[in-house]
Length: 339
Image (cartoon, rainbow, N blue to C red; front, side, top):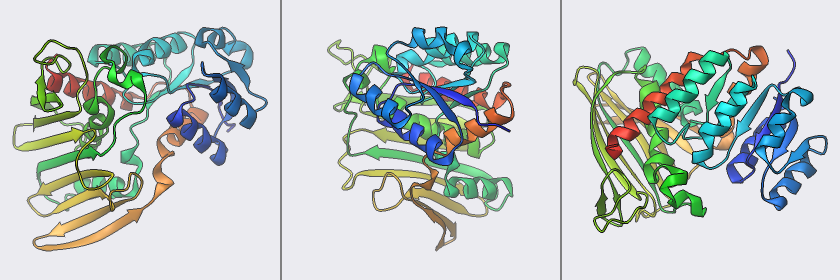
C-alpha cells in the first residue's frame, strides 16, 4: 500500500500544520503546493523541494493528471471550499477540506452529492472526535455505561478572535464564532450520539451584544458576523436536549473554555480542555458526587483527522458515506442562524 500523492491548496497556519502532520508521519507524498502569498509558497517549497509550486488553483488542476495526484488538501477561506472541491472531484481527485465544509447546507449537500457521483473520498477537518477523551466518551455512550443520554452541554469560548480579515466578511466566512468554533461541537455531538435526528433548533447569533437577524445583519442594518451564538437542540424524540454556546473575544479568565458534558440516567462525563489550553484535554467520568479523570492528553491528536483520511485514501479512493454528517452539521448551523 503506497502513500497517496497529494497537493496542498492554502498554506496559512492551519494548512502548514496539516502539511507538517502528514510529512512527519510519512503518510503522503507531497507533489504540489499552491498558495497566493509568495512567502508561504517559498516556505512550503523549501520544505518540499520536489513539489511543484503554483500560485493559482486552476493551474494546479490542469496538471493534476500529469503529476499523478490522488487527492487535494484544501485549506483556503470558507467561500472557496465548495468551488475548489467540486472542481477537484470533477478531475477524479479525493479531497480533504478544512472546516467548515461549506458556507451553508445547500453547498455542503452539493459537495457530498458530487463526491458520491464521482465515487471519491471526501473528508473534513472536524478533529475533536479524534482525541482520546472523545473516543472514550463515545465508548461509554455506546456501551450504555451512562444510561440513556438526556442532556448535552456544549461550550467553546475563545478569549481571542481571528487574525484574518476574511473571517469577518460573511460573504467569505459564512458566519463568525458559530462557523469557526461551533461546528466542531455540533459534529462531536452528532458523532457521539450516532447521528440522531434533530427535531428542532432554537437559537440566535449576536455581535457586540446585539442580536443579528439571519445570523449576519445588525439592528442598524449593517452586515457582519457573530462573535457569540447560542442554541437549544431537541434531539430524536425530544427526550434528549443539547445546549450550545460559543464566542470569540470572551471574558473567560483564560485562553479558552472547551467542554462537552453528557448526562445520562446511569452517569455523566465531561470532555474538556485543561487550564485554558487549546491543546490539552481530559475526560472526567461522574458517578453521583464522585468524579474520576480517565484520560488526559496533549497535542498528539491535532493531525489525526487528516492522517485518518490519508490512510483511508491509501486503501481506496472511493466515497465514504461518513461525510454525510457534515451536511447535517451545516443544517444545524443554518437553523441557528435562521436562514
